Length: 511
Image (cartoon, rainbow, N blue to C red; front, side):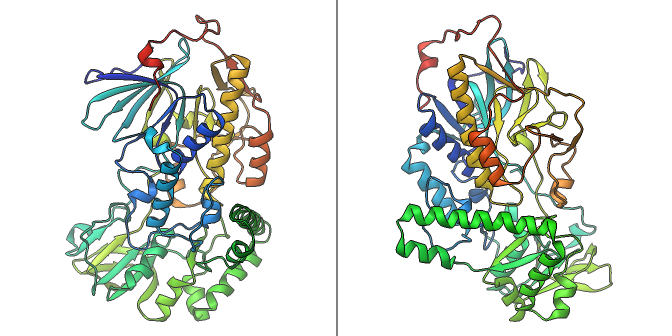
């Protein structure tokens, strides 16, 4: 039973076993895992945009790149063969597109299909998903399992604070999420507001042609230089078969990342000194102390990586500068700071963050009742208490997104196969102890998470309700652990375990 009224009238309905939402790196990975491990399951991928790539197709600002190494950000099943360990956006988009084409996953994608609502019916063991099609027509999909791979932020626009006087600025104000193709900043003065991963990417890239670029930050961020090319990876590729070299490099980076994160938590002062020493190899000590020494501990927020110290080299060369201060107001010609100083600019880039959005903003209802995810508890980092037959991908905050995405896709396939083997069609995470203490879903102090705490699910005090930021632990639990711990399996009451009859058209393959 559909719990949402559709307007305009539905023009077409189609059924698949698994419906994937999103054709970015998570959605393409989900398609591969389904084909590989559940070849009997029909599936389709709905993508609101008109291209593959998700984040890597949306963001087109200068210098865009991954801040995770590609040996862990790439798929486990498809080696990353390019030279750069930190790859730029076009290379990543090319990689994801090639994976989709090579495995035929692109034929399963329905572009310009924007999901608006999804309603679960326990009586039918079915999700009914309302979709706006390419020409605005109202489409409907039904599925037994809904797999949300739509990322964690709002694609419609990023976060920009309400800066006083912004409407008086005579130049261009740009957010990286909405980068104009025709923006000409060559020979111009640029201010980049922010100091996160986007800002530290933009500054050296824009400094190549701008007259000067200033990174304006409220407070310092941990920024570390790493080689653009992984020398160990290159050595292994010369002597070992491609897949073996890739696997060894991947595990080398995974283990080092886990070790480094653990050191950040157990010996933060030592790690802070190590990072600052690396910056002082490029910049004077007084500059490091003022602009690159945060007040928080390493990995309380995401650590920014710059390839071969490109940001620091731009500062040394005089093409860029860093200012640590608070904004008083925008002016006609730039920004006035709380200190009284004025920064002149022709272009201001507000690299001020994202707006988090769960499940792509899709309205969810279970048996007629709308679901507020903030009232749910995370189950194994992918499902939600009381919400049947739905999983979503949310990657690590302290490691590559794809490491967790791959594990979630594997687990979903295990879950589907287990349900088939048991002859059941409904799986629902249920809290055995509803009074279990609850905490914030993610222990992360970054502004974009703190602004979204009111919409995020919670996590519990123990497994399987605890969200781990540990790849090795998740690998063991999700690949080999139980699939019935506080998961309730059932069949629709009326069906008594029998699959509902479907028309020949509904039984037709999705693609």
